[in-house]
Image (cartoon, rainbow, N blue to C red; front, side):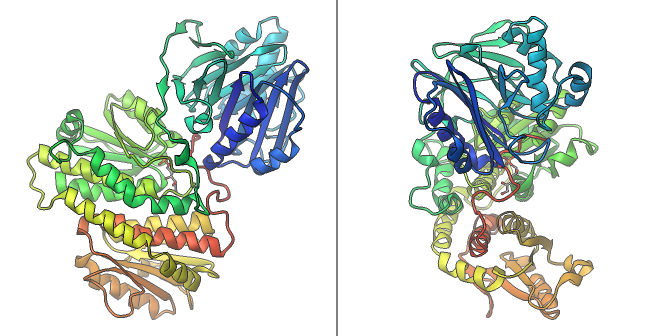
Length: 600
Ligand code: F6R
């Protein structure tokens, strides 16, 4: 979703900004722009489309050491050049980039800006015009910015330039992510440390409702009442090479291949010196005290949560409910007496999940966040955090974060079970090791999956994924992967449910991908496959070694029954990847999607 960068120092700002925006491309966007400032004033370049399109219109000769940049994922107004950021005030004095949504922008427009001729449909332009209005009323830019911030309702990360003040970038944050990076003789602003890791690894975290005055030699963090805040920078533990594609054609393929290594890293990260799995004592205690666990998440993370429920109920014997965050916040179920909330979020920034976190914190409940990003909003605002250790996930379609989420949930369930003296009759460390090897074998089966994708998915309009028990949940994830990157209408169904209506959609040749990895439902899912085949479907059975029968299209190595999703999802990720490739789709940056969904 929208991304912000800013630079103030001695170097060529436009190049640093453009490179920073390229690093933020993974978040998803549909237009981009930069503004650079020098003694001649502020110059704005913006364009619909990719950063490459923006690069093509940036004047190479413009020399400036200060600037701000933005990638926009349209919320207010279609993606076009005039709605792209930066936005300028009528006089051209002020230039603003914004990530977030201003809920009361229309009200502010009517109350304060009746006479202004707006150039865009965005809420952001209202903000920059409002700052200018207060400047015209006699306030200094800093004060006008502060006054404007106090009037805003909603979420924002802002970076503001004033053409009459070459020395400063004004910054503010509420609910949307934003960091200030510090360097020797320069400072930077970024939605994500990844954007500026090439220039610094020292970053200052910003809290909600803080405003920051950034010059090349200083950073002053203030609360909205003007009170100064002192804060030490943290070191972003990011390796610049983690965010390169290397020899891979796409990040998604690289990230699929990274899964065995991530699995081993997770085992290591959660093992103590004696090789026993361990998590923060307080988390195990909070789990033990809960009479019910509520897992809250969106999209792929929600699908991981569905598996997490099985793991926690099976090992720790605590009842679990799994909810889609955007529904839960407005339609809260009757809660148990001692609930514990678990937020699963790769990015740790998802606005829908955060809205639930804010609501349950107001009710006084405890929360654990499982995330890939230390210091992310959901991590900071929850009581406890468990990290995924998956390394940056750049492709919009989540792959390694999903398997990392399931692995960490398995570890949480296992350690909680030990805490509660619940017997678990298998060794999770050993079984996860077996999973890592099985994953490796699956990552080596690319040719087979490419062939299946060509055979079943290269021309179809739709596809179904069916499974029972855990396979059903993995089918939901397989369908999501396929639709988001290949644009094939794909649906995941419980094997037994298709015949209750949806089977009407089966036509001659409709691909039905069936998972058969669960012994207790193996015969029933095969029965469901026969039902669809009898109506003309083209079934493709992916089974687990030991449960296979003749005609199965692909057999995955055997792993512990509770951990099958960790391996059965890999063929589905590869199927989606190759289907998208065969259909000439932009695998890493699918249309309309954002990686970090920071609006509700
Ligand atoms: C799909 C995908 C999304 C995310 C969802 C939640 O591949 O990545 O469905 O899972 O937007 O994002 P996080 O996990 O960052 O909260």
